[in-house]
Length: 145
Image 1: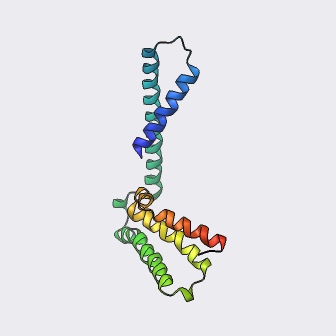
Image 2: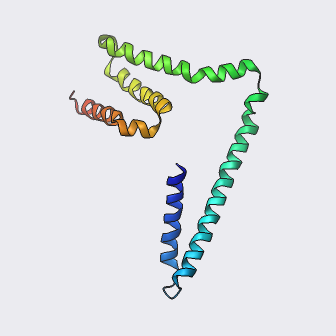
Image 3: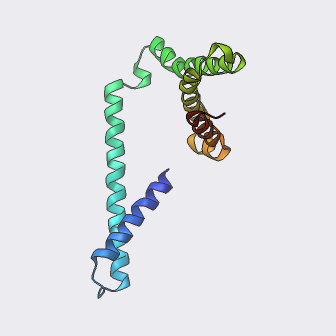
């Protein structure tokens, strides 16, 4: 993610310099300016990220400052939701007569969110699961199977 952001920032700086700098300026000056602008944008983006992180820490508090009971509840939310959503999807898949297509249409994105949480967005995209879900949704919306 950081390398993608860095690439986007460098691309924006490169395009801006090529568009707005006069053609008379030598390459060394352009490169120096590119480096300075990239450094400026990166420093500001890291400051924004840090300020957001500090806001969250002030708002929610640090985990070590919370009571142990709250820490346990916070730690169990995602696993419990994972079990509920995955269990509902498996149950619906094993007993399709009890679930309508509309209910399955709600469960598929929920299951996809769980999979993305556990395995990451990139892994899900590369695995082909996302294409299977979207293909099934397109077929369902057209009336086919």
